[in-house]
Image (cartoon, rainbow, N blue to C red; front, side, top):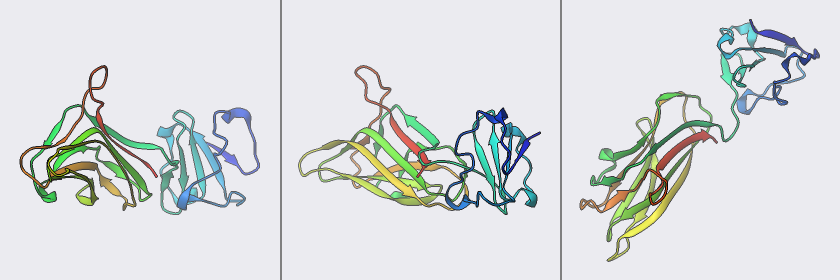
Length: 215
């Protein structure tokens, strides 16, 4: 059973609670001086089923360190900027031979999971991307089936262009269940556009990675 801490009551029992347990973020901010403010702690698996009586309540998970806040609709997990929500990597090259975004090849596909509507940061890294003579490599970020936009690597005239590639994009999503994905297509069909990735270690390229965090 979770334990209730009433306002003004102090106890040494929850010494592992973080110092900012009374602070919520973003739209979850509440008046910490309110007489209705309540604090609960217990195992994460014991988070109570939401009811209207929990509005304004904070819940601290003594086993995981996670924190939740109840508004007038539901419990919300409290996260801080930089909190990692998803991470994927590949260790083999991907050759790009398609010419439209509608047929773009998936480079890295994230985990399909429930996301809230707070801003997310998507970061993609490849140790090397190639674009052929007068060709363009388009790197696209997707939230589910929704395109978030493109970044490009342009092949210089009469020369293949090679560069390490890093792109960061801040997304303001709607709440829902979906995966973030990095895709690519090319302006040419010769197969000279390549997103590189390796296993890392001595003599090998680094993996190509995608990371999703709280922005």
